[in-house]
Every structure is written in C-alpha cells, then in structure tokens.
Image 1: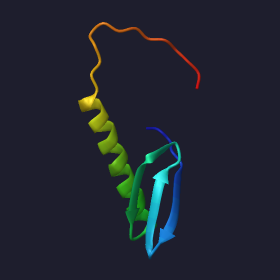
Image 2: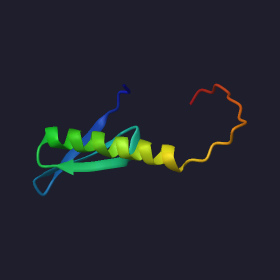
Image 3: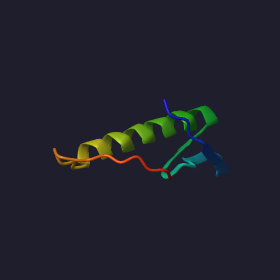
Image 4: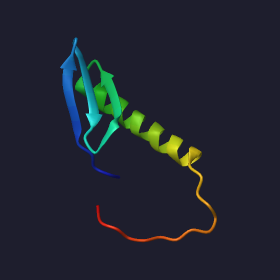
Length: 67
C-alpha cells in the first residue's frame, strides 16, 4: 500500500480534495471520511484505466532512476 497526502478544503459545505502527489486525482464528499473513500476510489479507477489503456511492447528494458 502506498502513502499519499490528501489536500482538502471546504467548498459550499462539501469536503473537496486531491492527492498532493497526484493532483489529477480529485473528489469530494459530504464528510471527511466520505472524501477519503471517494479519493481511494478515484485513485483505483485511474490506476486501472492506465493499466488497461497503456501499450507496453513485449521486448523492453528497465533502468533505475531517481526523481
């Protein structure tokens, strides 16, 4: 399991948030607990979608890099 930072704020009575390390993963909820559940779902959907729609050739190489 990976650790992420959830940045969140209140907007018109809703908790709105995003993952600091992956700002494209955003969601909202009526409570902070609901926001956390929705963010988890949004992250899982994004990862599943990327895995299904990414072409990786059979022959490939790997290289370790620091970011």
